[in-house]
Length: 225
Image (tube, rainbow, N blue to C red; front, side, top):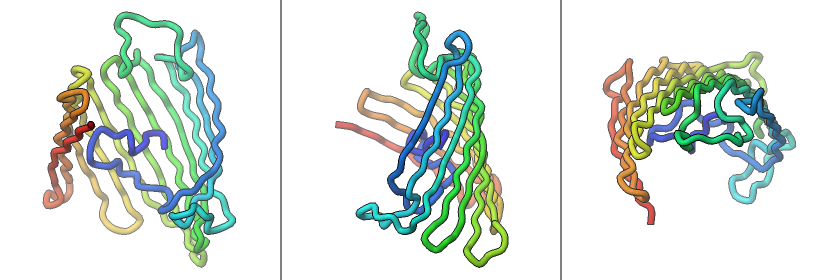
């Protein structure tokens, strides 16, 4: 995924869900090239994988393979393959006025012959300590005897700001439109505190804009030894 759920800063998951309930081994091919003057650049990847397995020995449940492909182009900022230049103000969380545009697609079929496809796009903007990124995806599914696909839509927009390396406030807006049921709109505010090198506190809220009964607040405490 362009923004992997495992890299999120909050306890609340991204709203895009998963492509398949079970994933299998596969092969990935990718390529990249820096843009003019070593800034930004183009990156692509394509993956062929089992898509569905038994969850134990990774035995493929059908002969069909899933395909995932994505491509992005970054304008400005650090080169996608790295840059040789450096400055006194450089830091691992920063990038100088850069925007990345991209798209992706996934196509697959499960053991019961249900066809699934997902496609969407991303925008990722950096301005020094500020990172604003957005995601949009349409998911479609068609059972074996169903004549038409049914679809759902998901999108989010998040802004992170590094006040200090140990203090990062953020806010995320999420929009989920299922095939059946009500549209869900949420705001997820949070603050990441790195109390020590091995201790992190993340107070987080999940505010439902359509049903306040679903609001919840939590404090995540991570300690490593």
